Length: 187
Image (cartoon, rainbow, N blue to C red):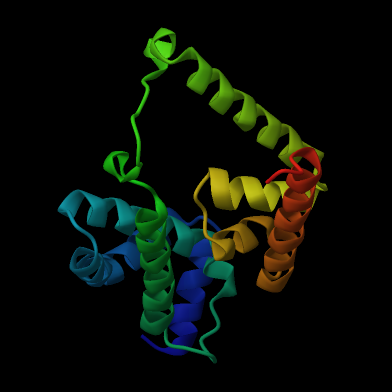
């Protein structure tokens, strides 16, 4: 296909043309799956990643520019970014065995009421502080730290420059630290 044919295909994908989406999937799904399978642990993870990548391709199809890259290059760039983000999220998420100390299941509050209530109180205070932040700072912190998105994904979701998202995160964390210092001067 020529660059013009690829551009036309992606414009049809952007418009929601199911035949165009199927054509895009038929052309590139095997290649995307092969790369996903090389990077991810299980076939199921790779299959899920392929679906997520094609959703991302569909939602960003109008951004494809054949003057900047061939379609295969663009598809693989989107796939690579998604897979790297997924690997980063997996490496950041703690495993149940990575916590030091004793885990107290929620239904055994009676076994350690002081520890449980103290943790719940700290969590509630933190959530209150986050809620007091300006909207952009609050949204970035919630999505990056509580929902596990990368800053690039948050940038795409909010349609804001990555630098703006990084600044909002930095300012928000600084405010949270300042607030924690004023609340707990002994720490």
